[in-house]
Amino acid sequence: MLLLSCGGDGGLPYTPPAPTGWVSIDPPAVSATVCNEVLLSGEAFISPTFWHCCGGTAAEMTAVTVTWRNDTTGATGTASQTVQTGLLVPLYDHRWTATVPLQMGTNRVTVTATGPAGLSATAQASIDKTGPSFTLSGRVITDDGAWGIGELESGVRVDLSGPVGATGRPASGSAQGGYTVSCLPPGQYTATPASGALPFGFQPAARTVNIVAADVTGVDFEAPAHRLSGRVSWASSGLPSTAEWMTLGGGTSPLVRAVNAQGEYGLVVPDGTYTVAPSDPLCPGCAYVPALRNVNVLGVDVGGLDFLRQ
Image (cartoon, rainbow, N blue to C red; front, side, top):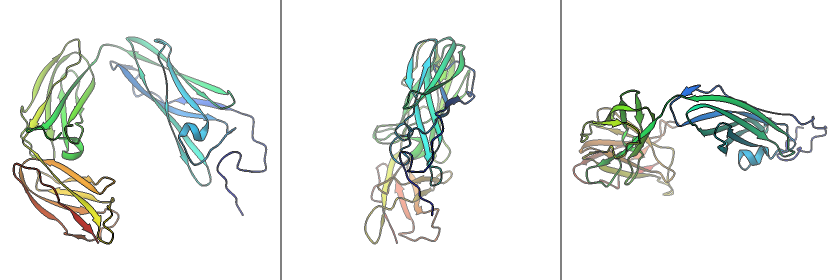
């Protein structure tokens, strides 16, 4: 009979090996950049002088701390850590990530993993910041200012063309719609909002801005649009059903979005006639009442588009 235990040495009748440790840095996506920061990642291991297999944060489960230091600037920080757990291998795939700020020139970064007994290991990488860069930001909102027109709710993005191409992802939700694009070298850019699923009439259709020596804010867009919303519940209990995907038809192409943890959904759309239908991708034969709803959005929000899962 196999006995498994989480925590400590698990009560297994053997002598643990001598402590060892290492940390690695994945090859950076770039070795030279104009960005003001770089995302680094890698793996870490300190031999199991302590295991807390199945609960808490990665640092708590492994008792390992991963930190970074930009040796060029003196800036320091603590990396984010993740670890996987399994039945036969209690802990594995100990990963770390860190966003490290850069200054002009060569930046030498040291990453250190430290264990509970003081054992440590280091790895290093060099990143060259080759020029200045700035951010461009703004909002995409409904023309009455009530809602942000976000990527998750409406499939909207803001495309930038200029010295480099980039894409902004507007946030969703009430009074949101904010987006920020970073790592932009100086130059003239054109920002164009777009949605592949819905025919928004954005005003203005595009904006041209010059980035010279500072961040640019207030690159805003608006469109006549309103929110349709509802909830999916279990017919038997009235509790929220959270496995659903909502399909919005009637636009230039279907828009598919998941409900939240309360079984609720909300979509910001231009005026028009639409269909809304729930489905569970893991249960293609599951039934809902009604199976779909027809809705006409004309100048006002439309709520109460609810469904019961049978």
